[in-house]
Length: 215
Length: 238
Image (tube, rainbow over all chains, first blue to last red; front, side, top):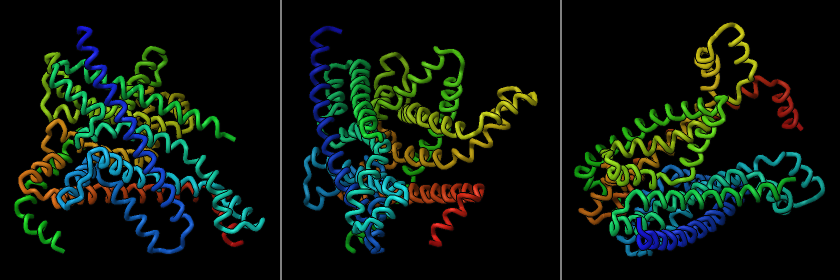
């Protein structure tokens, strides 16, 4: 392998990595927002209709493959006149799926806060909302951190799927450069290393956060 | 309403093709899961050996397979291996790729399942004269399987979902065929809604089964610890 070829592969994958990171951060932000809001609502409300609608959202999105959902969003919506760019479709699609996953993670976190905590909060006179914000939420979030880290790792890997809707991330660029140079094994092995590095960094960040937030 | 009518009008054309593709998806899932089961068992076996070299090989396999997207592994197998003279068909590459990744996931399931069993069980089995393999097969595995059933099913569901990725190496499975139908009919929303519905029906019924198993296990646990059950009853009474 000569230096020129190496440089081309390196540049293509690096610019792809930037897009991968962008899509990951965008989707993670959206997933965190959706997950946190819906989990809070489901935890606090007694309205059955609200709970059932949240459940429908979660079950629908958790039981459909990411790729199928991305196609539905990208090609399907375009047919109704809503044209999403491939980057928007990628962030929105992965973000909506992630939101459904995180609702369950956060809910499990809130529910594993010992019951005595909310009883004690009520006993010292906190209103239910205050009790949730000051007592349940901080402890519940800390408990959800390990599964949240697992989700983030999965998300970084799932961003490779948005190559199929032509978002110029690592795998899309890798495919491009393979078509030009035919250095198939080199390029895909380099992509694998890149993903390993990315998931390693994300894993370390969450491990650090867990250590920092321990009691 | 019009949306459903359009789907219904095209069902005679799409239905058989989508069902055929669904069978391919299911075959892909089941074959990959069986292979992954074997790989997972082997990895877990190697990980408990005494030799540090063997252990670290098994551990790095898990780290590698869990840190790289399925798509990269599929591309390496399907497009990369021919360069080394090994040519795999799309279906073979798809099953192998999924099995490599899920083998690593399943080895974690096996580890967690076996960790639940008290070490005394294995010691007792060896003390009555069973060989290590017999002890594993007759004493440890039957007990561990009950704890592993739910996580195994969870992995089977996500394997079914990930089988859609094989569309990108041209395995004629559900997602690829619906893409093909889309480009003939120009009705992407209808086709993909139908496809998503098919995936949903299978994955959701399986996840209901997972929940039923988990509830059963939780009930059993509650009964085996009468002190705990009495405690929750007491707090409810207050």
